[in-house]
Structures are given as C-alpha cells and as structure tokens.
Length: 502
Ligand SMILES: [Zn+2]
Image 1 (cartoon, rainbow, N blue to C red):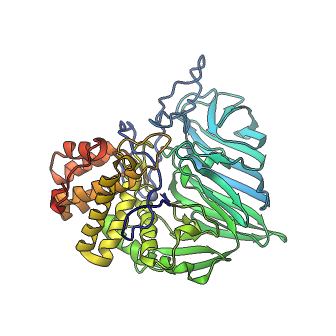
Image 2: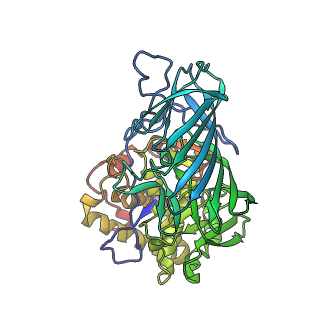
Image 3: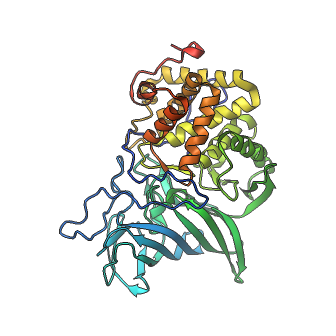
C-alpha cells in the first residue's frame, strides 16, 4: 500500500506512506520453503486457544503478534467462489453466496470465519444446513456432524444487505467494500475483506478465487485475475474472473464503474490490462505507459513476474492511497499526477514491486510488514536507478536518510510497528533504506542474489523477517545479526558510511 502524506522532502518522492507494521516475529513452523508453480497453501498455525470446554473447536484467531484474532484455526481454505449480485450500485445492496472449499486440520466440532454485517439467510456445510453464531466479526459455524481431521469440506454462506462501513484496526482509514458517488472500490489491507465475504482473513491462509459479480447496466466490473466470461442478462451483466495463483484474502478487489480499458503486453510477454474510470481525462494513462518495461526490469532482477496478468486501475475518487491487489493495483485519482509522470511512476513501481514482495511472498505475521513496504519503497529507488543510474539511486537514498533522521518520531524502527499504526513511516522509508544499506554492505552481486533466492524460496507462500535474514546470511556468507538488529529494531538510525551518512 502507499498512502498519501504531505512531506517536507524536497525531491520527487511525492507520496510516502502506506501503513503496515513490521515486527520482530517468530517464524511460523510451517512457512513453506518449497518451490512450485502451484505451491500448497500450508495449514495455518493455531496458537489461539480453542473455545473453553470444547477441544474440537477451531480457534477464533491465528495468533498474529499484532492482531491475534485475525484469521481462524483448524482448517485450511483452498478455494473461494464469490458470487455477488449488486442489485443497486448507488446503495451498494448485495445478494451473495460465498462458497469455500477447505480441509480440516484437526477434528472440528465448530470453526470460525471472519465476517461483518449482512443478514445470513442460509449456511450449509457439505450441503447440509449448519447452525451458526455471530459475535462481532466472528462467524462461528457448527456443522451437523463434526468434521474429521483431514476431511475436505464445503461451506456455503448466503447473505444479503449493504456492507457495513469498517475502519481498519491498523490505521484510521475506511477499509473493505467502499461505495462512493459514482462507483465502488475494494481496498482491504489488512482487515477489510470480511466487510463483503466470509473469509479466513489472514495472509497465512492463501487460496485461489473465482469472483463472479453481476451489476446493473451500464456498470462494469474489474477484479483480480483473468476475466473469463461476460454474460449479458438483459438489464444486467455478469462478469467471472479466475485467480489461479494462491492469493492472500486482503488482496481481493472488486471495482465497479464505467471503465476505459487498455491492454498491452510487456516485451517479455506478460499481458497487461489497465482500467481507468471513464470520467477521467485521457492522459490519466500516461504514468502507466511504462509498466511493461518495469515488469521486465523487475523480472530480470528477482525472477519471473509471478502471475498470469498485471494491470492498474484508477478510480475517479480521492482515497489517498494505492494498493497492490494481486494482479491489479488500484489507485485513487489523488495518487496520479499527470504533471509529474516520474513521481507517479515511483508509485506505479512501488505497487508493481509488491507483486513479488507482499503478494507472491506474503508476510507470515503482520508485524513483518516492512518485508512488504520496505521492499516496495526500494522498488521506487530501483526505478530511479533504471532511469538515472547509481548516482540517481544514491541521491534518492540520501534524500530518504535525511528525511528519516530529521523526523525520527515519524520513522520508528521498521521491525516494531504498533498495531494501530501499521503503516507508519518507518516501515516504508527506513525499511527501504535497510535494503540499500544491505546492498552497500554486501555488494551488488550478493544483494541481488539474496533477493532472488528469497523470492524463489518463499514465492506463493509466506515468509518472516527471520527467513529473510537467514537467506541474506546464507548468500553473503556474513553474520548480519547486528546489522539487522540496528536497522530494524534500534531507535537510533544506523550510519551508511558508504554514502558519507554517519
Ligand atoms: Zn506498499
């Protein structure tokens, strides 16, 4: 994510912070280390105690260090099918069915989903009616018969109503399904997905998705993945999108408006489709013209672009942020400045960088958010380097360093985000500087080898700060414990002697 912020910085880094916290987290025992094109989604870690008196109840949270109640234990969601009929775009009235295919990872007498608002009109497990209870964002499902450990099962939840407006726990910011005058967009990091579908809402439980949305004419829909079918129903249109690579729930997006669509392909063959709200001026597309070049450049540095397709979507409303939804980054119009193409390209590079670092390699714990935002910020620097060489990159890094040292309270150590300020300045700027300092300390060859080994080892899965440090030490052959301790956890901003910054 990238959030708009007014800054004193005198160079072209126009926007600063998204917000997510990074934290010093113990690596989950089951973080996948495999490489695979369709890697398995590992069962979530269960650390929250089950319901008192029922040792076959799935836990109501996954024990995240910042948000212990996010997600749920006892099962592993494999696929989601969202089938949403928007009966009225202006009021956001929905009739929907979400079907989840999952595997029990323990005996389950009951289990939880994360879900807010709506009237649940039917809930079935394996096509049999199931009881359910609701408390806050926890939807507890009680199947008619307990599920055996290892059993595959299907949950189908039918619901209707208008999504409740939600404020994220991570920052004072509306999140999830958001209707505005003219359309709808979905921006869910980290906890907004439960505002429109029942979900195991933590990046540890990735799944594949089918997203079916029906809208009244003349509205159109843009969502993650590939548009596989468009069906004309007379006065409404149904769109079906398929997301075939594992996706963290917070990266699910559905956007409704009248769009101008633009398609192209990178020289390396990655298809790109961009959506611009049709009311926007034509030149809104200009800062996105070089995405193909960026994809091929980043692919050369870290490994092949992870997904089947990429693209950006610009809405005709100001929401002060851009978000790296998987295969489709979305931008508020206030994040796009057509009079500063290069400044906006930095944001475009930031969201694209997340497709590798954040979307394909996802955090195992929200406290590790610097693994998303520090890396994406460094993606901005890499684009500066592409355009202006190493002198440009070093100048960019010196600018960041001066900003961080001038306003230390605004840029806390990136490894220790606060739960109510996940997307603090430190996880972005100081996180990005951590990578540049690492590069200067180990040299270019080892640095890019570290990034590509880390990406290859954890792609389509999850990683922790400890996993990254391990790869950095393994590849460089150096003991980097005190380096990372100083950069990630100590209040004092470390020096970068190679740039004369002490
Ligand atoms: Zn970001």
